[in-house]
Amino acid sequence: MQTLRLCANDDSIRYAARIIRAGGLVAFPTETVYGLGGNAFDAAAVAKIFAAKERPAWDPLIVHVSSREMLEALVAQVPAEFDNLFAAFMPGPLTLVVPKKNTVPNVVSAGRETVAVRFPANPVAQCLIAESGLPIAAPSANRFGRVSPTAAEHVLVDLDGRIDAILDGGPCKIGVESTVLDLSGAAPVILRQGAVTPRDLRKILGEVAVADPGVPFRPQRGLPSPGMMPRHYAPRTKLLLTDGEERVLAGAIQAWAKQKVGALVPSGWSICAATRFDWGQWGDWAVLASRLYAGLRWLDEQKLDLIVAPLPGEEGLGGAIRERLLKASDGAMWPPLGGRRG
Image (cartoon, rainbow, N blue to C red; front, side, top):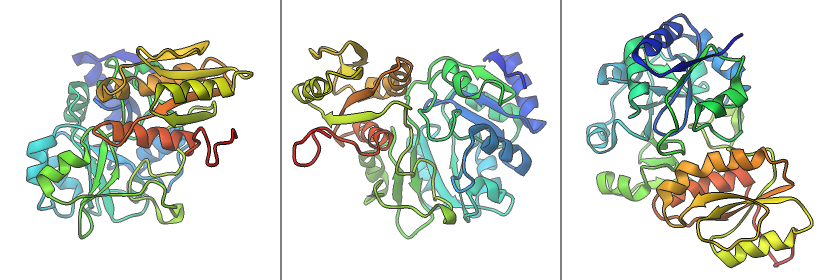
């Protein structure tokens, strides 16, 4: 299969919409990361998404919509909290997990009775969904478990020849996946952190719990949300994390001086690493989030033995970056417990 790279203009969006309606796959930009889209009502098209990504069937997809009517075609009952959440955060980087209608194929929801739905803010994504006239199921446009794509080039590295086309809309603004909020239970729970933070949601909903990313999951039941595996968003090169202090990052690089080490380095930090990616100003979480996956992908291409990165705290968008890095590293920290190198 030849993958067409299309500039995201009106004619290309119309062409991409025809591909979607015909059961094909199109990668497209959102404000978070690039998604790999297919007709959410077409089980065969959705199966192609899983095949192209080599994604296991127990990992559900997010369905992207462009109108309230599309949402109601998917959802068994619009939750009471929806209107307030829509007014505050949508279109935008918030996904809601809600009870689904039988019109949603089980392959989309990993066999569960819920569906994850969001209204993307990116105008290319909005136009593609509206032009196709269909809700579009779209996980991140990369091989399963790998670093998510925030540029068209990233998509082609993983999926060239596996999908019909990609709409090149330039780099993604936010750079980490959407917040996932589960509204299907007795109380709202954040299943994955993102640009809509726990503090943001608590202003609207009151108390909101945050799921523990370290809790073991049972894939045979189907996950309630994407991004809940213990290891995910991972480069091929081993990733090691440190506390968010310059001296600790420098110490980790020195401890592995005999190996080829690269680092995500905040701007202005005096870090002696032969291979370094200028990540952005520490504490400017919006910039660091937007450059996170590009940095991990670039370092992964440098044929290193080890990548080292400082770990943000929980505040604001730093919490989403922290969650992604912990999953990408499988929780590997320096120094390890007991202070010995390992």
